[in-house]
Length: 400
Image (cartoon, rainbow, N blue to C red; front, top):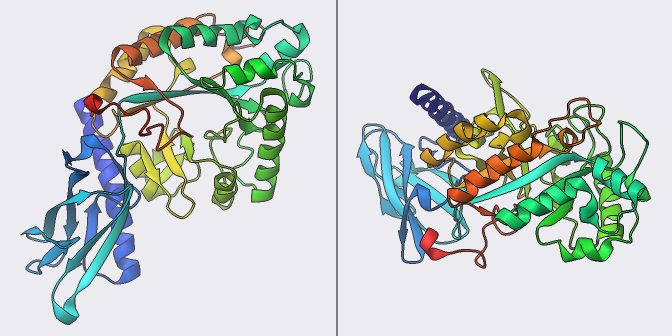
């Protein structure tokens, strides 16, 4: 990322934070606001200083000049309308309260944030639009799942790099011979279960077309589609193999249906969070503009109403030729707001020679991306485990 692009990204993120804070100030009538960290931020070791039992961070805000300000009881330093205060986060969920003024003139602002206590450099990879491999296995009746060339490729990368994959499933095909998951045999169930630690199946959509199937949907319709895929996956692959969805087809999900996903176990929803213009975002899970800007800048943001975390996909592997993957990834390690987690996404179709847009170098693209994260100290995780893949069990203190 060039310096100018980084500054533009930073400015966009700060603008999003300010929009959110000023909206809050307007709604509450308060004369004090917290500008950083914003409501919903997820803070890790890169955002502060580790202290005994906590993370010390600096809170920034605005209040009328001359008014005394305290943040969680800590007196703030004042400079004009601005204030700063150092506080320590000690819980997973923390409430930051800034109080300005004295007596009857007191005003306050609050922001809730998460502390990623067990954070470490990590990556996850999801593969969208899966259905062809299931049809292939059902048709060929292989002795093993990994006689299927697609799953054999993934197994090879797991053995070489330890990579853990989530395959986001369609219920049925829209290309080639008709097939749906109810036709997949359960004879491989024990093999699925034996590999469930690194190879999981999740809902993606009913089928590939139409595009954006859940952008304007009802919770009932989305829930029914999720349940149908879950039922079939559990039938033929076992409960350990099924994992709640984190990437919905085309990403866009009507906000009224977010809770339906949370109720079915989803902890994270990922998207590209593409800025299309002033206040306009796309492929962003239908998140509002202010929070979309924050996700774009900080990689992730929690919605406390549903408990869902919205996260930003860093790279779509099939969109880059092998020689362009590393130059696209390398700037991430230089940006403390984006470097802790690398989020890969790609698509199944490009693997298969019969597909009209087949990419013969699919394996090379995978290998280039996975080798880079491995050589740069990132470890494979599943987002559904712990907080964005970080748990006490997989935490290594020396990485912090």
